[in-house]
Amino acid sequence: HRERTKRKRQAESDSESDADPEAPPPGHDPGHDPGHDPLGAPSERAPDLYIFANSLIPGMVKIGRSNDVERRRVELQRSHPFRLITIATFPGAGHLEANVHTALHAHLVDGPGREWFSVAASDAIHAIAIAMR
Image 1 (tube, rainbow, N blue to C red):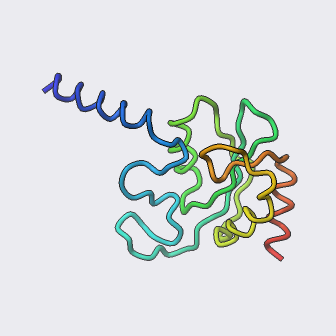
Image 2 (cartoon, helix red, strand yellow):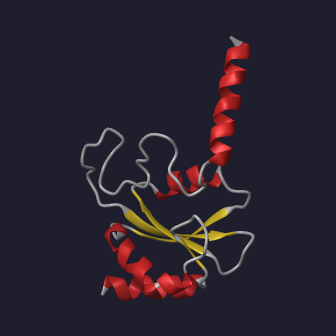
Image 3 (cartoon, rainbow, N blue to C red):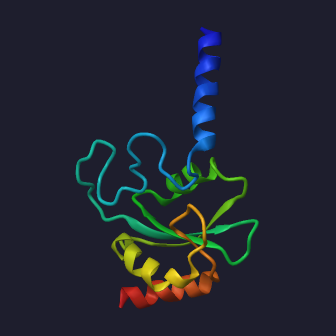
């Protein structure tokens, strides 16, 4: 049993290391699926918009949405060699994510991540405030 478990962990580790760090884990990703729970049923509340910061690179933020921001931060933290710091959350404002990404598109970090921007946290908050109007 131990050997089978060890082989299974190694296979999972190998497949995760080749995966896009921004891609959701295999299967459903309820933390980033707006308005749905793990079983696909509509959730009772709208997803929240969040801003995470990269602890090693000042001026780099991730803007996303989740039904459970802290759970999403912890999920993402596992796949990064740096700390994710929650800068701000905007309850129920997840529907603004596309607008904010469009507004900050010129600052999108080149690479596989679709939600990382090279902007100060205050600029990201400002973009969200404008989207909220």
